[in-house]
Length: 349
Image (tube, rainbow, N blue to C red; front, side, top):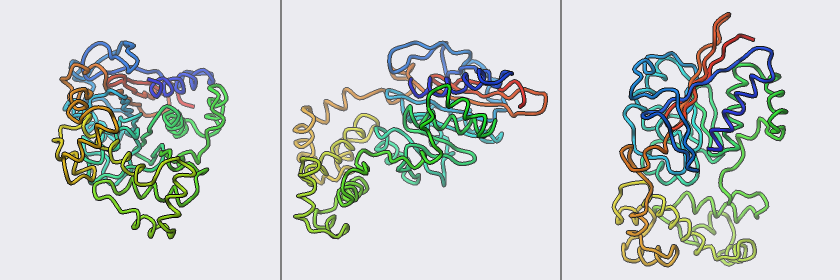
């Protein structure tokens, strides 16, 4: 919800700092009259894809998909069709949190990097093996934008607004919402905690190698060779700075990857074990239970909803769109809560 409200705040504030109204907004869901946020707060929507056929034929400039921690990850046919229609009409497609997943389901992220919350990296990697996930908190190009959390959501929406009203006008918005620390270079902000610049470079390089080699784990000797230090030096650095052995840290990375796959996909436990670098299901189960205090089967039974028909169906996407800024005509920015929402620019600058 923080990502959605950050984006909405920036758009509303843009109107406040200008003499004329720049954006109006409309919320749109894939189904239903409201959507429930991860916090359990119900948000009413103005329309929904299931009942408003005109939305599929609307001419939007920007469509923003807002995901969330408990958002169902399976493809929704109505949302896929809506996004494909928006793309064909030339709209920019953007995403908050894990909202890039439905854009990927629609086949619209080819040859582009995607930014999404780390909790969903495992699902994304297994579901879209030909797509790239950025190492940064945000990805932005001419036709696509995606962010991984509330802070990067705000930066992303500010860049979208800047593309409409210009850099100077956005400065006023930044001052109002107290985000003067946001800079153009923030797209280079590393996403993983292991990229903390305060850690020694060999430790950061080792952690990156671990994260990049989960299905076929490297040995500590291979990692040491890659970063040009001895295995003993590597172990000493991990103990001194992380208070854990490199082998144990590597195991935790693989087990967290496995947990995400169990919660977010329908892959069998055997396939999850293999995808996490375990050749034996029994060894995987023992390590998993030791680390999380419960078996893979128990974790799977507690998993979040995976399909739009699940009991948590209301916790879903937020989408958005904008109409072009033509002289004397309004510009509509559609944002979506749950499954869809919208903002309009009603005057030219």
